[in-house]
Amino acid sequence: MIKISAEDMIDEAISVLQDGGWIRGHAHTAEGHCVMGAFSTARINLVMRARGDVTYQEAWAVSARAYIDAMTKVNHQINHRVSCQISIPSWNDNKARDADEVIEMLKLAKDQQL
Image 1 (cartoon, rainbow, N blue to C red):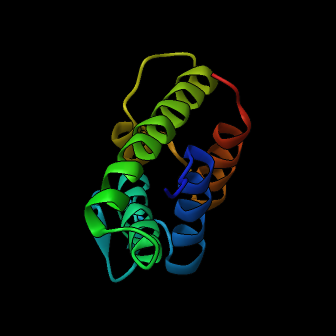
Image 2 (cartoon, one colour):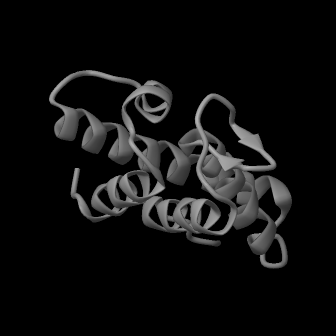
């Protein structure tokens, strides 16, 4: 059995943003990824790496829990930091200032305990 954690998912999403850039308004373009797009790509990357150890279906199922847990951590951190209820896509497209802020938010989310 493989282990993919929320922290693994967040680390991979950070790598996606650092390597490919951050954008608003779209999940993924040639210029980069939004937060949700980065997490979608991160999940695919982690599943593809795990395929040698387990079946694709098993890796996809394990990654689902990590994806949900990562989204919960990120959403909690965003709402705590901006002191209001806001979705991850809304924060990405309307509140986040730049890639550095987005990556810092993801790092803070990774380290928090829920």
